Image (cartoon, rainbow, N blue to C red):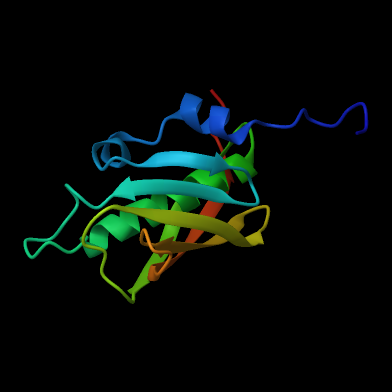
Length: 143
């Protein structure tokens, strides 16, 4: 590693120090792996369902946006901020119990734009939702 290279970042520690936000905390999200290349989080189905007992579609999106936005901010680095500008989700299966797991991987990591795909699976490893989020990366205002 070159002398002037930044020290490697412990992604889980970075995420814990930053916090995931009140909504993600209320929904029970837990990060289990966190790096620029791959982020993983889990979320319980219980407490996040529609009236008929299926995991709410918006809950999948909260999981996806939490992972994708946090990953984009880790990529952005100090003094920069990533903000979501587009998100879409395709739900292909319904989780009704247990936990779901979201795995976030980058499709594009640019200086001003990031795109991440988040695949959400149930306890049996079956894909339930595929989410794509685009973030705009900008410099924080100078104070």
